[in-house]
Length: 315
Image (cartoon, rainbow, N blue to C red):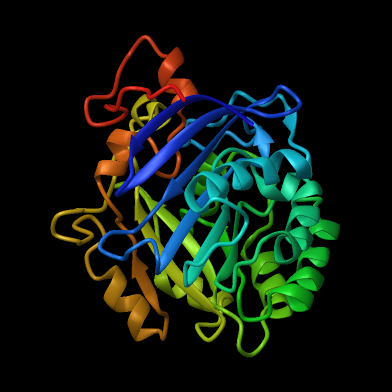
């Protein structure tokens, strides 16, 4: 892996722009979660595709799709970070989270499954926790069935699966995620097969814009609170969000949902665990947050006032 550009700071996050051994340009992230020290939690967020064909309305990685990364190219991203950080493939952090969530929909690449099978053998990491975030594209049933097998064989109780939902309104969800995908009934049925006693709950993620429709009762009609949890995140400052006039519904300072009053309380009344995940606002300035994509920033004649403020460190 050749590092072309590097943005960030060591106490929060680094975004790497790299060229793989096959010559493909990828982005990947190393981050911590202040005030949690790196000894407790180390996070690496890797790309699975070269760009992304999905084109979610608030995500800057869409529209650059050029193909799939090989298993080796995905492992190169992880190797690059851990060797620089720890001097080898031994990771002492109590939690070592690898998120398949930077660039690309992971379920569109079968090589992701090969990477998952290699992780426990390649890295000496007792805290290993893979995390896969997906919009659940239609026609990928074989991928998802094999994911169950891999989870049960290698990662029982130590695997995080997240479905990007964003809205409970069918038509709005079609606009936000403009590809053919599973409906709530399909996701719920899969979740029933995926989840076993002792596993982490399956996450239903809402990147919440002011206009997003979220009906707690509709979620409860499909998703068992004993097996699914709800995560709500802000709309991060991206070029796509600005172009589509999508504004975040999350007040990061007050840690509240002023445009969806009572939503968290209603979900909790129905038995759901609800996580309001805001994170470090400095990550917006670094460009390491979900939906951000440094390459779009570099190619854009316009600039976002509150994002991508760090100068590149070439190493």
